[in-house]
Image 1 (tube, helix red, strand yellow):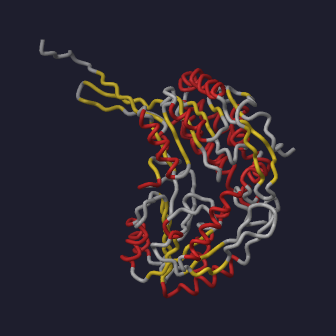
Image 2 (image 1 turned 180 degrees about the vertical axis):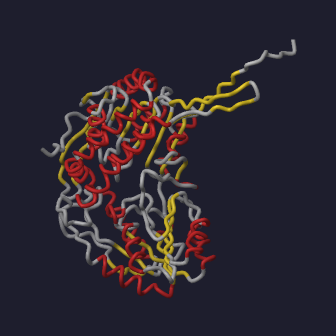
Image 3 (image 1 turned 90 degrees about the vertical axis):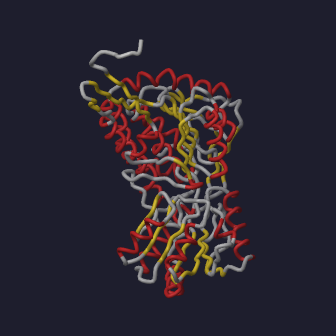
Length: 485
């Protein structure tokens, strides 16, 4: 039985669904049709208090369990999530508009991967022994306490798990606030965790807009904030967290470069550009939206790209054959269409696309601009839609300078068959997540995150453990204490 799009209640607190209809109503819109499919209510101060109180009350007992015990629950949740992948994927498609062809292999599955990975790691979170002659020091890795996760709308299930899994593995409690645009799937993550044996209060979900996030971030009982979102939101959240010296992880936006050298495999480079610009209708923070193509192969690249974009199946996201779906909202579609107008006004050459599709829902065509220059708005600002900018280059040093000339530093990719050049370019990229002859792979085993204005901290991999725990040093003296008096 597929999940009903109308959740049992808006919030999930202390192991059960909780409703308070006095909060602001938030309509959930299905992007493929523009229809309202659910309503949730933003958390009131009473709901926020209930979430914080229950999380604080439950956290110490959870942290006192062994890592093996915590890990077993997370791994059980991963198994349940995989068993229900079909239903979770349908709900994700209703939530985001992304095609089922995509959600069924990326969203709940990557969330399950995170629960499994950090579930397996939970038992390994040990300290170290440092011998100092007769005396010694030992370290303990301890939970931070209460973590707040603030999600983006493009990968609601995945982000709920990417933040929740390492936080819970380390013994923390988490309150997760999904984006108000995609509020449905995180509730199912919370439900599955409870079913897997998670104690009540350890993973709570509350709905709301910026003011709810602000109330959580500024509460003195919160020890850590992890945000996935835009740079402007990141600045506000980072500043608010800094006021109380809270731990933070910021996974923010990008305008990432992808460099295609003249010796690249054209099919793979075009495939990488499609993944880095049109997957999820271009709504991916790490997308390589500035595609620098060597002049010697530019027209060949553009010709093959246009041919392959002609194979995109644009249609009903629930149809497994559909490979390109609507954008998440009318607002986001209009932002992207506005950038198309700016690109044309600045003199970029429109190769393909650029229009809203004449059908219900928030569909726009996959769009490619060529002859883009570095100073154009479409080459400077994050669009977060299916708009690719192709720029020319001839010299490696020149293209590296141009690729790095951005406030962002989330991701970067290079396509070349020259092994030395591939690693040399990757080393020179000013970006936290880089790719050679591929783009946008994000296995849970690898750290993910950015530099410069694209964020701070890392998600996934062993590195995430450092962002959800703290070290305590204990000095043990075996001989007598010497004091001056």
